[in-house]
Length: 45
Image 1 (cartoon, rainbow, N blue to C red):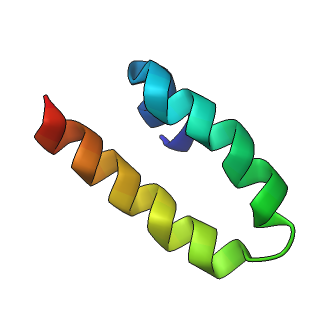
Image 2 (cartoon, rainbow, N blue to C red; image 1 turned 90 degrees about the vertical axis):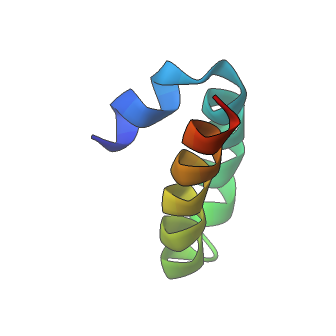
């Protein structure tokens, strides 16, 4: 689910790579932002 969401949108996929780095410091925050990115990406389209 998480991976598929990122692969659907190239821009989000790139952000996903950065998320992995920040995920080490803020897991919970990145989880919420990841879901938010999916929603915003869907709204963009």
